[in-house]
Image (cartoon, rainbow, N blue to C red; front, side, top):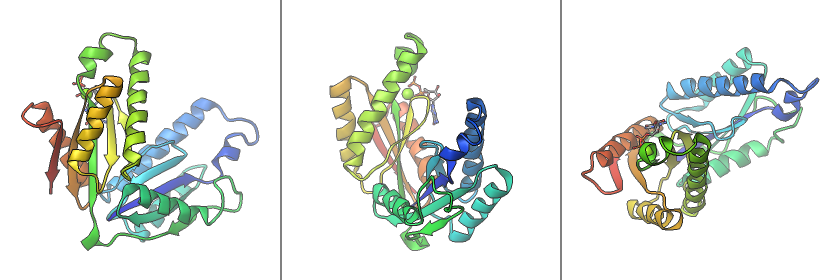
Length: 250
Ligand SMILES: Nc1nc2c(ncn2[C@@H]2O[C@H](COP(=O)(O)OP(=O)(O)O)[C@@H](O)[C@H]2O)c(=O)[nH]1
Ligand SMILES: [Mg+2]
């Protein structure tokens, strides 16, 4: 089972324009500092946060308990001009876990409600024995030589975004999620997705948009370990001795 947490800034939309619209650069600084702060705190408990849309972040939080969540929430409230609410969900697939986490929080009111503040809504948590995280680290083959060093930066960025869209569309059908993590890299929480399924998706994308991908997959009780194994599996593929999808287990 995978445990996911939705982190949502309380009443952020109205706050960004009260009393008048705040400087965009300041909002960007707030969002990126909040993301880094949360990443540091969840990572200390072997979790992993994806920036998603910055005002709503999704995290894999196996091994992060209720008390840890409350401590993180309080620390943010003490140090930032905004507060956060969170929902925690557990399920067999990442899609279902984040859906459960979202529904739990939605029950307490809207993202732009003035009444809803610092809620911790719990659908369920994963216990130690059932804890399992599968992550695929997906990367575009040879982006530096074929795109980064040849075409304008914005055009490369456009292609990376298109790849993201195609991956998201195909992975969601399998109950898997996909997040952009920078460069030409994506991470997919993908409990339940077989390597053959992932390889089929990679091949479809190569046929459809002519972009070659590879994926290292890690399986472990926590996001930290699963992501690390996925990175190591990707290194194995880069060394050229394995297939385009390679799995490593703890
Ligand atoms: N977040 C993250 N970014 C990475 C990682 N590896 C590479 N990158 C980024 O992806 C870019 C391309 O690296 P890579 O895929 O190894 O090179 P390629 O062979 O030209 O595709 C790098 O310049 C980094 O910005 C990683 O493990 N995590
Ligand atoms: Mg690459």
